[in-house]
Image (cartoon, rainbow, N blue to C red; front, side):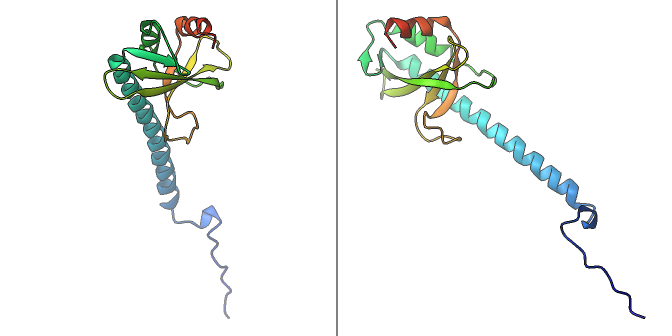
Length: 154
């Protein structure tokens, strides 16, 4: 008498060889770690480039207008650092151009949607998240940036 065998289904996890699940989970973990590391390195690279440009700058333009006293803006930009996500977002962007000591470097800052004295800082251009504002370089959390923009009527 012939016995009918049930065909193996690849969709049923109980039919997989025992090594498949650990290999799959390890691969997913490795992918996740790679994504987080790439994002961190990308932000650090953008922040380092920004800080180098701030160190060379002698003139500042805010939305195309030359700032009479650039040092307060430069000091505020030097305070850029990483801030963990807190489920808010950037609002209206302001373009800051750093001039002097090399090519003009553009920086985009945008006030946080929940914290009025926190500003998102971006380097315009291609980026990991395809964000139209650019590659995030960190945040500025000093109240002086808020005062400077208000004084500039921005």
